[in-house]
Amino acid sequence: MAVEEILNTGEAHFCMPDHPGDLSFKEHPRGFIKLHTDWNDKRYWLPEKEFLTTLLQGAVEFYEATDIALRLQGKYLPELNYCKKILEKVQERFKWGYHSYLSLPNE
Image (cartoon, rainbow, N blue to C red):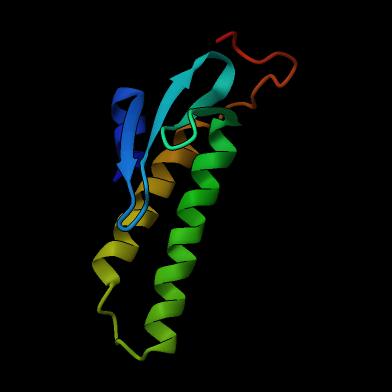
C-alpha cells in the first residue's frame, strides 16, 4: 500500500486501475506531502498527518460498509485489519505535535 511505503521510505507511487496516470507522493519538511499527478502535471501540497489519516479512515469505513451491506461475513477482514494497523502507525508517528502551516516548502 502506498501509505505504508510513504511511512517507510518517504515516497510512493500509486496507479489506480482504469485511471489515466500515476500519482506520486513525497514527504517534505514541516509535515507536508507533495502529491504529483502525471496526467496533468500538477503538484499539490497536503498536510501529511491529515492526508494519510483521511485516506486510511476512508479505507476502514469502505471495508466495514462493504462487508455489512453485501453480507460478506468478514471477507475483507484482512484488508480492514491492515488499514487499521497502518492508521495506528500514522497516529503514533504524529502523536507528539502538529504541523506548521505558516509556510509551504519551496518547489
